[in-house]
Length: 106
View 1 (cartoon, helix red, strand yellow):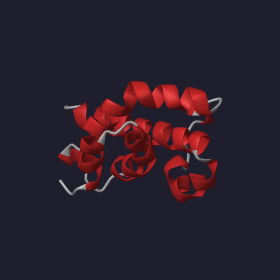
View 2: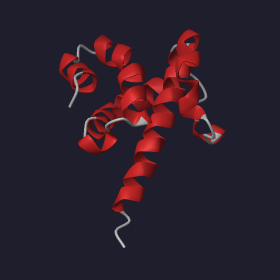
View 3: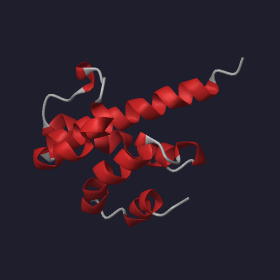
């Protein structure tokens, strides 16, 4: 039995949750917009503060963009959360190519 689809699903869900927690720490006023991404999420995946969330985004942004733009994520929570949570982060780093990857339909 091929377990890859289930493994990818877990990875995509993990990235959606972590990027949502990161956005909550970095922009608390926007947190309510993605509450459904955290339904049933492990609170242990949250960050202690905005600095920790930013460091994680700096390390993982390329991976999140790569995963969020593969066809398997079309219509998933990861595609939606990545576009929302990474927009300002990527914009602040002048990474327009990644912003386009996340926002243009694949």
